[in-house]
Image (tube, rainbow over all chains, first blue to last red; front, side, top):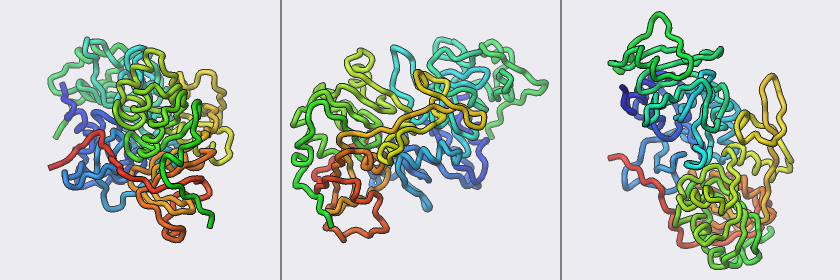
Length: 219
Length: 231
């Protein structure tokens, strides 16, 4: 099984040089720690910053510089600041190359639910619906099953939907999967020590197993 | 040049009364109009409708209004940092309209720009789409959303001049420039107020036409929600 850091590290291998990327809160923010130093990418923050730098040193903390998760951050040479309408023009207008976010549930057609548990958690959707409705490429970081062992990769989502038919790729603690537009989770890679049988048992939606399934390489 | 400055937050909010519809700038606690918030708390206005991306935290920002039960309705995209608010929401004590952040930003921008409605893909296929018109463009579905305005827009900026021109700093900008255009009366509080001519016209983010009242703010706490540092 992969840890959260390992899921983030595996996702970082999907990143290409020159991309503008939006990282959601949770596991996706960890992806920033694994971006290879030899490629240049720019992180976009929905609250109005292009070019997110690392967490600042204590003495450089600036309350006027935060990311979408309300954490203090720094800027980098070439960063720019803009208002919320312009930020979502970048997002909705298809200018962000890659969106990485978390999910509670994903369906075999690529529907995603990640903003509400009725009666229990109604924090709001933030920028998630905008991000998934227009993103060129969406990768989801999630646990394969819930804490009580229920599959989170389903035929259809049971929780309120964030977006329909939008997820392209998923990295879980057990596997790397791709959505087949005709309906199905295509198993691309399995985590070290995890069998295809276990993944089949823990995937409630339609799992498509190709002839060759690689083991996730974390080097 | 037309002069817009007033002496204080108290003077700026003097005519905000019960039932008012307010826009408040800020993303989390970053860029919130701290002085106007304090002035309104002292007035204890009731039954407010507040349009703001977030609801502050339990004991700072808009969270202070919620503790005093001054808010009838919130229009926001994310209220998760405020446990009291989530509780009032789940128990039905407060009315909440949760709007996707980009839709909220564009509704406010459109409201200030005289655009009554527009189409967006955000929320298609979700409960956000309930009761809304849809239309297909190039084979893709979009939702019809309407422009949003307010009786008063409460803005926090970094620098301003007596003509009402504003400059923002860092991610404290966020919703402030668009809300400044969408308030019937826009009140701006600034860290540094200069006479007209004191700002470089090339650097102005919000032209003074959108601002009706401006004052020199004071005592900014600029509370940080998540202080994250590297060593």
